[in-house]
Amino acid sequence: MKYILIVTACFFFSSSKAQPSNQKPCSLPEASQFYFWLGDWNLTWSDSLHGTNHVEKIFGNCTVQENFNDPNTNYSGKSWSVYNANYKMWQQTWVDSQGGYIALTGNMHGDSLILTTAEKNVPVSISPTEKLINRMVYYNISQQSFNWSWEGSNDGGKTWKSNWLIHYQRKK
Image (tube, rainbow, N blue to C red; front, side, top):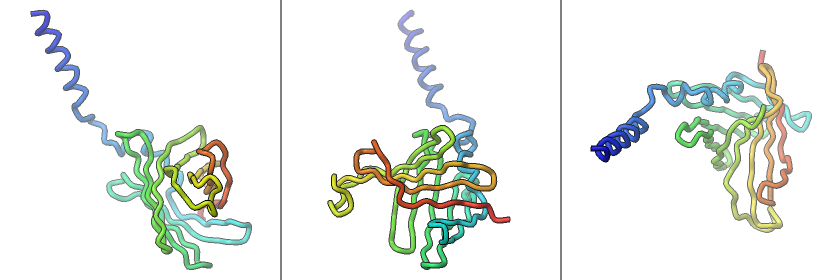
């Protein structure tokens, strides 16, 4: 009898853990961490180059879609960011007008949102270690502005070099 009670209790506990939560993954507090990015932005990099970005929620407010445009070089790109509640992390996919594709994952770290690529094998002309990790860091975040940095590491993420810094200013 004692054995049956223990097995029944274990079954009840495991089945209750397997039941889906009533809270939708898109309504979790972490799923709103990218909301600072929503809206229309003027972008500046290298002190004189300018672009725009329109960022909105789509797919029932579960996905953050970015629409980047650099009119000077006719370069454009889009990203889709989703908070994956199963993995407890953000996942972002980027594609652009030059055939680029980047997959990133990450989370908030203090006041910064950091998304990182997997380490890749690259030619020695790109990295002396023939390994490269990239990341984007959103920081100095306020209602009206923030900074974004594209960084690379060839030592497994011990040190990072900024390759592209963009200042975002909300359009009025």
